[in-house]
Image 1: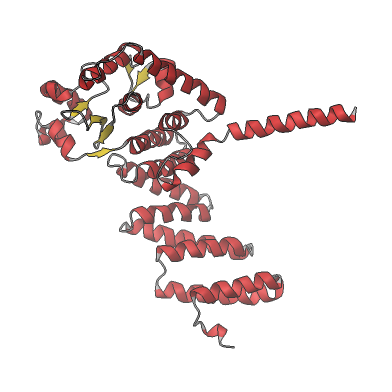
Image 2: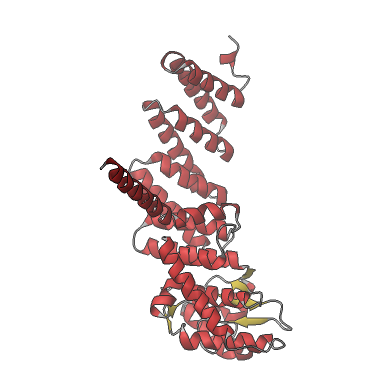
Length: 377
């Protein structure tokens, strides 16, 4: 009986381990992209994880779908000497079979798989990755409002607008494309730019991006729609992921600045001063000339440190100090206040902490302020 019970326990344990592992794909991707490149994930796998496939069984199902699409396209056969014509056929095939309904909010590849709905980001990701797997290198072009495909290595530079069926090699239909782009601008802005110069304006304010950066736009869009639903924590997480994919997104600067303000404020007002500090610290890292972020970061820092002292939480006090020190936001006055705080910590730790932890407090402070008079005795 005990053997059976042990076997059942083992099965349950392995089941729980498998479940925990399969639930962590977004966590795994977040760690993988932290150095700004993908090592453990392919681009298409990362695209599906960012789209919402957070379990291994889901991801495998969507990857099977993708492989079937690529296989079906390969079965058509292509003229290896006519890369432009072949890429055009793939474009037409996708619009005839999978890219059926444009929807601004359908930003994920899962929207394409399940509903055949797409927007500029999801359709560009799908088209780019399929073409790359067929042997045709692709890039994207990001503008303040839009993104589309670029083939940089054909005999001519081919640009593809993925949101409409006649969008392949859009330069051949530039007048019609200008009319299409007008819908993305308010009337006053259209008149300011010029009705026949929208495309030129878009490109003068855009930049080419690779397919890794393109995936960052998907993460930004996930953040945008989470923000619309009032899920600021989820929005902020996707922004942080997006920044590792696409460090300098032109189309999302204002969005993420606004999110830093709102999410940091919500955390601070709810008494979560440490979390608010880290949000503002990230904001300062990216927008160090923004005085609001600097001020908010300082206020959140000192409130968080007061809480750590009240709880006698030395470890978090230390980590917060390191982050603040690296931001270089402590004025001379602040530093004098911090020195006073540290003297209090040293005195407290000498009688309440273990000798090893007291030593850690002293050595930590010596590292940053070796000439502090407290060490002369």
